[in-house]
Image (cartoon, rainbow, N blue to C red; front, side):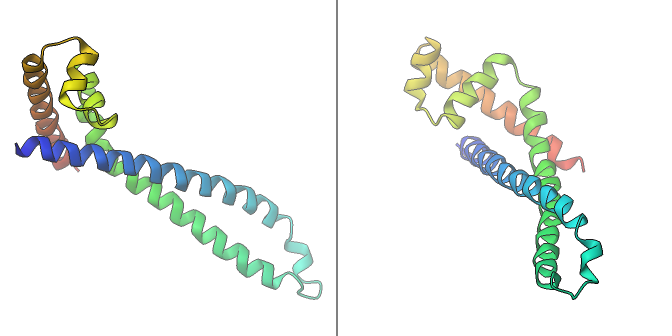
Length: 143
């Protein structure tokens, strides 16, 4: 059904967002370190201007860091409705959806993992998907 496809897409977005955020955070940490080093250079700039070329590189890196900070803010805003929706689910619903969509297991594998019959698993997954999707929509509208 529709909500299953949509839920799958939302979980894929979530995973991509988390990977992107990690990358941006690593970049930001590197650049913060570079900024500290850059601050020590100021007095020498006057002296023959040897560091001007390095400075341009530095400025670019600092711009990149600021871009990272903005990207991280944007990703966090993107993640918000997903995380809020997840937080409102029952523990079992969370685990079912994680197993199905984070670990990409088949419904049959999910049933085995939770020691449930196939029909009960399908039923509970469907309810979890619908609830998650409804909550996600609700929290997406709130800006």
